[in-house]
Amino acid sequence: MPEPLALRPIDRADTLGSARAGVRDWRAERLSGIALVPLSLWFLAAFAVHARSGYGPCIAWLREPISAVLMMLLLIAVFRHLELGLRVVIEDYVHSAAKLPTLIGTRLLCFALAVAGLAATLRVLLGR
Amino acid sequence: MHEPLRPLSPNIQHYRPQLTSVLSILHRMTGVLLAGAAVALVLGLWAVAAGPRAYGIARAACVSPLGLALLALATWAFFLHLCGGIRHLFWDRVRGFELATIYRSGWAVVAASILLTALLWLAAWRLSP
Image (cartoon, each protein chain N blue to C red):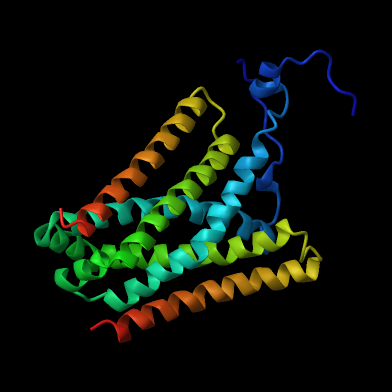
């Protein structure tokens, strides 16, 4: 296919072609997904063991440094993966003027939720 | 931008649902559903950090009929997304694209998601004190 005439970088980034930054996001989605395989299975195993535990055993488990570290890694991987996945879904299905605000809102919300989860985990680990 | 009123391609409503297309859209739908699970995880962590009273409220919500139904749905969605995601990783390496293989891996994903969900809840039932 012949190259379109005189595309400025901003045209490429806007609507007229690839901004050539997609590969990084594509890779990050896979990388976070691969990281989530062991992390999420670890979390579900802990869930199975503590399904009927009361507050004491539950907080004792999360206070162990290994649990807290894995929980924080899980949160980072979950919200990175979620942000990238939701972005693709929004890009594919939202075509109205709401598209850009939705994209920005989703990214900010994912970041805020990740920080909130990390803060709660640290509060438990450090004993508030 | 002015949007002309015409149907977007592909007009999927004209196609008979197939395992391939159903699993494709289910991968996205379970992904979106798991966003809710991620929010629940953060709420749960906040409840644990806030103390026994908040923990009790979160726990009561989890073991209510609606809570248990949502947890069951979320765990099945998780395993379908996990198995489908692993299938996608093989496709990313350009493996398993023969039609017969695609159907075999597709049914394997469906079977594994149901089996793993059942196993998890059985384990939760048996292992937890």
